[in-house]
Length: 265
Ligand SMILES: Nc1ncnc2c1ncn2[C@@H]1O[C@H](COP(=O)(O)OP(=O)(O)OP(=O)(O)O)[C@@H](O)[C@H]1O
Image 1 (cartoon, rainbow, N blue to C red):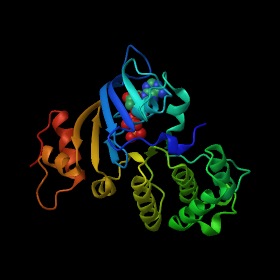
Image 2 (cartoon, rainbow, N blue to C red; image 1 turned 180 degrees about the horizontal axis):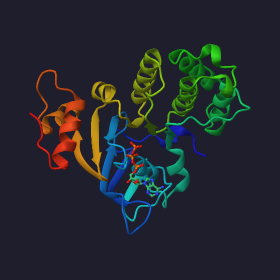
Image 3 (cartoon, rainbow, N blue to C red; image 1 turned 45 degrees about the vertical axis):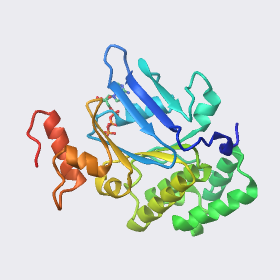
């Protein structure tokens, strides 16, 4: 495996370049109908859409778990076919459901990740201590997963991904189950990851957090992108730029417009 620093790209090359992807579970019934998503180094892109919109399917294509029927996915400049090792080691994924190894403590999970990604021991200890502090997990470092709450397990997953600090970090619905302090810790840790050049694709139904933190939003509906841009641009497109109008209002209006309803505003 390469050292992560070798994967750093210059600030002008996307860490994710998904272009015109048609894909899904059967070639006869595509779920994605020409989806393009770009994430630049240091950028946080929020992926939003109703249940069944195609977010998880898009993520599976990005992770190389599904192959596009047509179109292309590049991670850190390469396709899965061109350089599978570089492609796979350039993206870290945090699923909505934590999956931890029952026999390993929190610290052992982190140490194992550091070894797998060839992070030097001294550097790993400093980063583990900082992450544990940010997530208020210092006292839980010696605990086994079965003794942790759901939110604490989710924190361990996030800490592992942030320890790797990959070029592309994909996070699925991270806010559910986290207490308010943990959400703040997560957002601060994500800011740090972005400052070091990690690009983040964050899928969530919790729109206020995305409205505050995402540089850009990609709005999916029925396997297509129906809006894209900064939160301000997406709200403007939905006709929801008025004072007090939120991203939730904008999302509702965009979906209503697609479904043949009348957008507000
Ligand atoms: N394993 C599968 N086989 C066939 N079709 C699937 C499979 N998984 C999902 N789909 C279909 O693909 C479409 C998109 O689902 P997907 O899981 O990508 O949506 P999502 O936006 O992630 O939704 P959610 O917010 O509920 O997680 C849906 O119509 C769904 O029924």
